Amino acid sequence: MATHDLLDSHVFYRKLTRNYPRIVRGDGCWLYDADGRGYLDAVGGAFVANVGHGVREIAEAIGRQAERLAYVNGTAFTNDPVEELADELARRSPGDLELVYPLASGSEAVEAALKLARQYWVETGEPARRKIVALSPGYHGNTLLALSASARQHYTTHFRDWLVEVVRVPAPYAFRCECRGSPPHCPACSGEAVEAALLREGPDTVAALIAEPVGGSSTGASVPAPDYWRRVRAACDRHGILLVADEVLTGAGRTGTWSALEPYGVVPDIMTLGKGIAGGYVPLSAVVAPRRLVDALGRGSGALLHAQTFSHHATLCAAGVATLRYLRQHALIERCAEIAPTFHSRLESLRGLPAVGDIRGRGLLAGIEFVADPVTRAPFPRAARFAESFAAAALDAGLVVWPNVGQADGVNGDLAMLAPPFVVSHDEIDLIVQRLGTALRATVERIGAVA
Image (cartoon, rainbow, N blue to C red):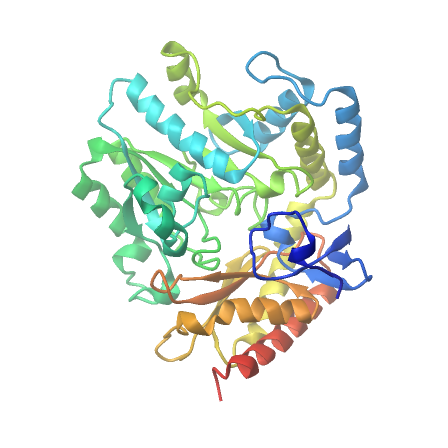
């Protein structure tokens, strides 16, 4: 394996105790290192590469735009790609969501969306609405307001003194709820816990509720009960609270529909998008909002009080336009929905293996939760580092997965996430499952977790 020694590099890597394979090329669902070894990318990098690696049309669109006009200040000028991106996203967005504010990362989009919610209430004469309600476990980004809304203890420990207080509500996480996801649902799985929290806090003090429609890495692709989001939407409507759908991970077709909320018939007040809207070819995200909110700002301060140097960026937006058109022209969201049953049915073959507690998800998004005891669902102790060991074993087997920890109680808990590109083939799905089994057996043997 061609790796790059940290001691020989001037790069400040995120993880400081490992050497990194040097990837030099990508093609479809595959990554290739400097020695020519292939890795099956079963998670699209970081849930990003939905159209696959090495799409020439997108690369060429970026080059053409960079040559013509790379950057202009978004507070002074508009440009063709930003107008086209907004048209593309507005056309796909549900309900009255039609105004698009492009940014460069999911964290930035969440930050801007929550600021928009707060600014809306201040400028419409309800400044007491200052609280954010968020689900726990949950994740919304690493800028300070987005991190405040996240419920990830291992991320927030060092920065707690810098974070704002956020109201926490138990997420609909069936595998770890008392009802186990079966009717009659517990308050967390039914949505009753959300309304109870709103009433407890005082609805007229709440600005917004933010959540991922289908669980991301924090709950391992946990899918809510069918009525959950309708009940939450109704509660927000009763109390005049803005519902912010964080679809940075789940949107752009990842769960088999453009919006993960679509099957529930629910339209949020604000939506954030990212990751798949540019397929990983450039950093790109967006806030999508209705005119009823934005017009209130227009009548007041006349601006969204959130500035980013690289918002409305011509080259980034050109990449987004090319990606969205590629998705449409090749019917890749439809393909995601069509191949998803095969993906999940073949993953089910892993359910009987040691340490597998649950397998769940929707579309081409899945989570495998690992447990020390399948009967009690007790997690492995954090000291075992099961998820990290599993991800390393998967890489050794030529498979890229996304590990996550802490979902059981904030500290303990291990799972692996899968989110292959929408172009994944049936044979590649079989290979993913085969290599997952290889990695699992190696992990169990390595840590001595199961006899």
